[in-house]
Length: 83
Image (cartoon, rainbow, N blue to C red; front, side):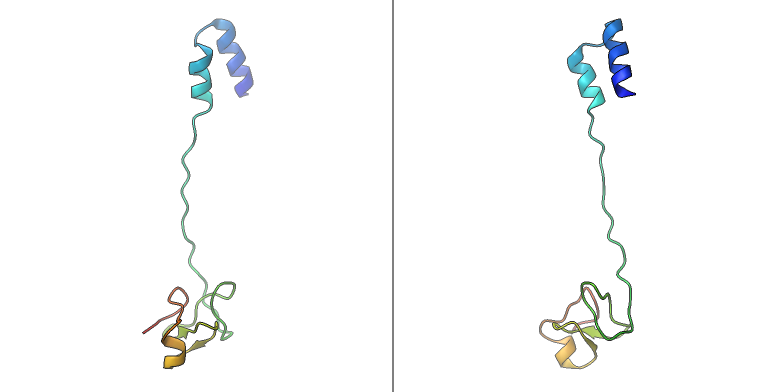
């Protein structure tokens, strides 16, 4: 379709080729949106598993829990609560 319009405009000499190419090659803008990470009840969390249930922490090893081993150093805040 664009080729047809290009040929038509060129044959009618309505636009110089340089301006026509600029019009036809305008870049469209895109945006990305983060999708929510699903909650799981398997006890595993992190990339590929999702979030822990509400109130639980995701340990650095990818398990859900509530003690300092889960919620402390290395806790994955993207996938659960952390201290």
